[in-house]
Amino acid sequence: MAKAVTTPDEPAMLHDVARQIINRHTVYGAASGLLPLPGLDVAAIVGTQIKMIAELAQLYDKPFAEHAVKGYVAALLGGVLPVSGFTGALGSAVKAVPGIGTLLGMFVMPGVAGASTWAVGKIFAAHFETGGDLADFNVDAARERFRQEFARARNRVKAAVGGAKPAEA
Image 1 (tube, rainbow, N blue to C red):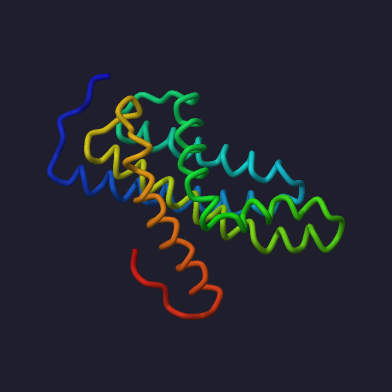
Image 2 (image 1 turned 120 degrees about the horizontal axis):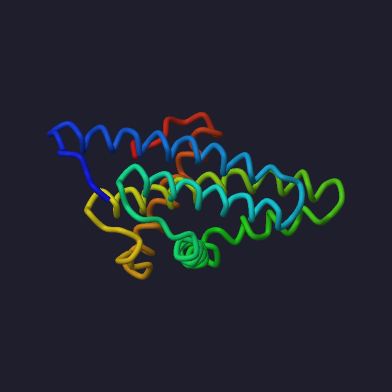
């Protein structure tokens, strides 16, 4: 792929557009958490994250391979779900209980979905910004940063719901 000559303002512009992509898909991810059917919500959330990474790859002029991204997203989420996102897995599963289960799941899943989508976006945007691409993405190296970004996003959601001012990201 031929890349145009860069200008000094291009990195800042790319970063701003990446932030817009991440923010938009974070909303889509959170909305996917509202889907009432268990499993369908998780599929929609992961699909949203894959689409977001595809847009980020295009923005940074990086090749995109959906099969690789699916594995990366699963590995990142799998590394966080047992620790702090268990609530998210439970939120999806509890939707199977008619009535109250759907309501309870719909309270939990949007926050987990939005936080994980935001964290995934931050990880991939940072990787692309430093010149990386999908071929050299290291899940093990990214896992700790993903946990930190996920926790930061969850804290922002909690602060927003509680009315407190969230810490800057």
